[in-house]
Structure formats: structure tokens, C-alpha cells
Length: 394
Image 1 (cartoon, helix red, strand yellow):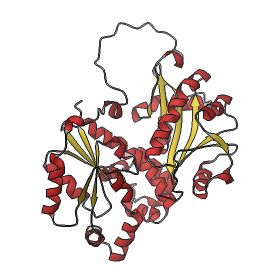
Image 2 (cartoon, helix red, strand yellow):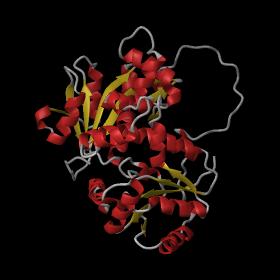
Image 3 (tube, one colour):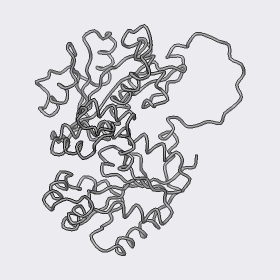
Image 4 (tube, one colour):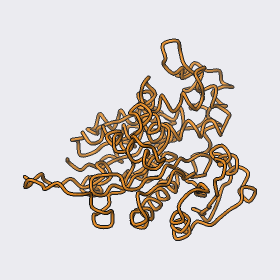
């Protein structure tokens, strides 16, 4: 694949992000509208469709089985917990679709547009973050026109998105789209000509999971027993749809089932939970599920096929999850360990910096998230991810 310079483009509703993206496309960039990909992710039968249906119930469906986006929007607007649940489903799904499109990029510069680009951690993928701003009066007028809303509803929708201060502090380029199109175009072109594509980071490992190597003809292999995890190099990454069969086997092992999960059940679980997996010897040797909501990363379903695999793989799995959680501005990671879990899990948790915690010791915002996922007999382990905390829903 060809490497490319990636622009992350964000801004609040009505700021004119799409206008700036189209200008960049006119200058030669490959453009991707991540917000539009959310509609693709919610199509009937997609993993996110199953997860949203489980989270919000059949009442958000149209008679055709499609998700009624207006009805779903009404459910989550003003309800931070519900919004967080929806975003924990959609952000990974949209991220996966975005990567698929970026793998096909041949242009030297690409741009990804998304309202929640920073919240979803997408800015961590980018070579530069561009933020589009606009005066509130103009934003409200644009939202009223494009969404057919009253001024009151448009103002409420914009207020719910919060200030741009945090994103502006991260931005390399700020485009003020308060004026006419010519003024905006002049800013875009000036920033475009300052881009140096040769400074782009190598994105192969991020897009493909591992750096592709040239294929070579292999000698006939002699069938042998699977190598122990410690004898092979581990690949630790996010699970993919192509991992479904291996995931069905690993989850069955974790749950002491005699047979692998049925593909439909594996697909449903894949869509509901963010599995991170460690692969060694051509199989999944360890896994963990995690999700982020209201500044909390909840980690559960931690499994390894052996004590050796646990010691080799779990530190890497925990590190990957915590890196992604920090990218989503999570303040704390809470690990749920069943009472029946092997002793190595608690040992690994302690080694990774987690400490036993009581539910009533958690901040109320965190407590609500954890209680929804707590199973009978689960023990809580807690790790602070950020020194400065916000402790309010995002």
C-alpha cells in the first residue's frame, strides 16, 4: 500500500466541516465522511445493528427492520448514559469501516471528517487535526436550515455538543467558517499548501494490524501440535470480522463449552463487545472485552488458554486497552474479575497496576456504568488512567 498524509477534520454541528472536506477533495485529497459511515454501520444485519437493537430494544426499528434514526436520536438526546452506550457501539464500527476505505487510498493526502473524531480517538490516527469553527448565530441558522429545526431546538442540539476548547488545543489547523465561501477557501488553500506529505507517519501497522511482508513460497509443513504461546511471537490487536471462527473457539474455551459458539452467536457477541485478542501459533491464546462509557473503561471477559499464555499476553492486552481508553479520554479502567477466575488473573491485574476496589468507593458517574455490567460474584479492580479528572458524563 502507498502511505499517505491523513487529516482529521472536526467541528461542531453547523460549523461547515463538509464544506471544508469538499474543498480539500477539490484540491486532490481522498475524502471520507465518517458520520455517513455510521449510517452504513447501522444497516440491518451489521454487527452494530444487533448491538443497538439489544441496547435500545425493538421499538427503535421501522417495520422494515431498519433503525429509525430519528427515534433513536430522541432516545439518546439529553440522556448521557444512553448516548455513551450508543457511541461505544458506533465508534468502533465506524473506525473499522474508515480503515477499510483508507486501505484503498492511493492519493498522497486523505481527510476523515467526523463530529466525534476526537471522542472516538480517531485523531490519534491522523498526521494533523483540523478544527472548523463558526460563530454561534451562523451555526444555528445552518442547523435550522439543514435539519429543519426550530431555533430553540437547534440551540439545544448545539449546546449538547459542548465547547470546542479541548479540540482547539489539540488542533494543528483552525479554519474559521463564519464568513463567505471565498474566505473559507483561502484559509483551506493556505493550509493545504503548507502540508508536507513526506512527513506522514507509516500507517501500515495501524491499518493492517501488522506490517505486510512479501509472500514467499513455503516448504511443505509437517503437521505438529500447536506451539505454546511463549514459544511464538504474539500479535495483540482489535478483533476483526475475519476472526469470527477463531473467536467462537476461544470464547467456547473460556466458557468451558464443548463446542465452538454458533456463528450467529459469535457475530452477535462480536458486535456487542470490543474484543482485543492475542494471537500466537495461528490461534487466539488470550482475549479481553472492553467498552468505554462516561469516562470509564470497563474490562471483562479476560481469558487466557494457560498460565504461560496469561503471563505473555495479558500485559500486552491491558496496555492496548488502556492506550485506546486514554485516547477516548477515559479517567479510570475498572476490571471485573469473576470469583471463579484463576489466581493468575488477579496476579496479572496487580502487576498491571490495578487495585481491588469497592463499588461505593467509585465516583457516582463511574459507579452507574459499572453496576450495569456487574455480574454476581464479580470483584472490582480499579486503575486510574488520568491525573486530572472531569468526573462528569461526556
